[in-house]
Length: 229
Ligand code: CA
Image (cartoon, rainbow, N blue to C red; front, side, top):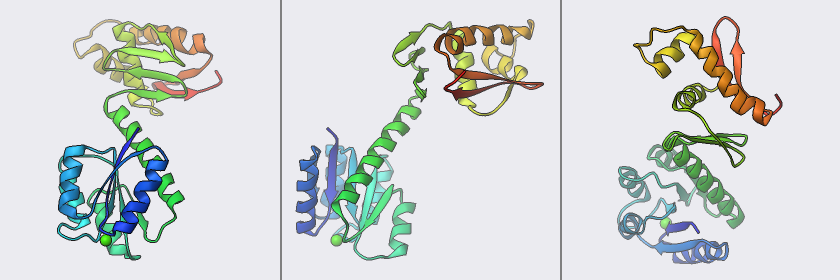
């Protein structure tokens, strides 16, 4: 279960949020000043931070700024007043979202879910894994699959699919594919691209009844996922 750190000097609010989050199944720790909170964030490594901006010692803005030098943990700021400049500063310092006090706990819970989900997607994309409509590739392990069914691709087929997917919704020319997938030194027949596109279509589009690789007349090819072939 996700770990959430709340840094909030108003002990009543910190306790209330802690109890509500624990009730939702989160593991929760609380800190009541900026410096303790920053230390706890660095040592405990929470999955998400709820950070009050007006804190004794180190301000929330400063906690956010320092934390962002080493961490991309999702941060939801709490602001006491409807102060636009505080929010802007917080967002500029790398906070992901904010709530103005007093807030409804249901809204905070919803924002936490969104932040955690978005962060997981970001992490997956950083790792190179791509997924759309059940089709998934992982360049780190050269594996691919559709709704759990593995797709066996040669290295060249994988590289071609990966390159097209990196340029999702953009037409890519045969020359660009030759240069980037086969390498600058390639001197063979440019029809090789069409041959490999055919292999990919057989293994993915035809097999699973989806459409991913589109022919763009007079240009080349484009990756775009469509459910109905
Ligand atoms: Ca405060």
